[in-house]
Amino acid sequence: MTMTVFGFLRRPALHALLGQRPMYRWAWRSVFALVAIAILADVLAGSKPLYCQYQGQHHAPVLESWFARQGWISWPEEFHRNTWQDLTYTRAIFPPVPYSPGDLDLPDGQRLGPFAVQPGKSWRNRHWLGTDRLGRDVLAGMIHGTRSALLVGLFGTGLALLIGLWLGGLAGYYGDDRLRAGWMAWLSAILGVIIGLFYSMQGYSAMIRAGWAPVPAILVALAVGLGIPWCFIRLGRWMDRMAGVRPRRAPLDLMIMRGVEAVQSLPGMLLLLALIPLFHAPSIWNIVLIVGLIRWPGFARFVRGEFLKIREMPYLEAAQLAGIPHRRILWRHAMPNAIPPILVVAAFGISSGVLIEAFLSFLGLGVPADSVTWGTLLNQARDQFSAWWLAVFPGMGIFLTVTAFNLLGEAFQESLDERKPYLPARLRRSKTR
Image (tube, rainbow, N blue to C red):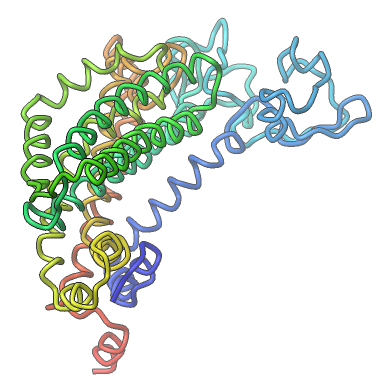
């Protein structure tokens, strides 16, 4: 029986467990709330109006700003030269928090506490969580910092999982005895991996310098990094056939796992700090890429262990006896059944990604100097211990986010335990007793 990611999330056992355990239900709802805050950060906190009528024209600046940055639409010159609060609107609707994370409240807004007197501030323009040493609103920084934390946690873990799933799946399914190829194919494969890795990294840096958006740049870099080895492998196999080279058993599992051990032998934080200077300019997407490149060995080892168990299942042996190619068995039958336990590890990996982002931004590495994240707010708390709100609120955000994802991972793991059948029918019978 195969299973997809959405199929796992719709399992009756998981939903019954979430309904029975309030702590797991809180974690599930908290994750959804964090994702919603990250997506709607510009709607919740920002100096641009959600809607405004200016000089007889209707605008939605929060939505239109992205199209204006791409050059697809043109704005009035006043929108570029003046701050949004200085313009006179016929009518306007601002976000609930009318501050962007980079707005400075000068000259009397530096290090205002949440309970401090804020003269001249209406209840709507008040700094509810205080300000930092530059006069930036902490609540706006917390809201937009959620986006930075989840970007690194979700996309960094997703990239690491993609690499680990591919390499660990190949190592676990094929092992050292199922894959046969000639020496030309293996030489081409090794050369293709080296060239693909080099050009994917160089291509990503070149695309970012050329003004590409980060997500398309990462996708193109992945396509280059995977496409070049695939082309070299096809070329090597063709050369083997043309030269009449006899295929021999290839120790694929041995080679991949020695590579995993070589990467894991390096200290993680040292490798992390060594990769940051390789990129052209600080960006949160650079941290996403770095987290994916240093976290994949752990996922590869776990995926390999799962595939070593799955490949001995009777339905896979039946598929092999039916003459189905190994490549199709791997991706169409073995891979979907490895998804549930992999999701458990991914949930714990997301919380680790959030901690890595907070650690790097706390040190001022990898993120732009003018960005506001949970880590940068914590960094400012070191200069003045009396500014307790700069430590309490970001620390609480990191703690709650990590706890929510860890509890969600525990819920995934417990729902897979067949000795604890959390089925709706069982729960209904237990309630009637």
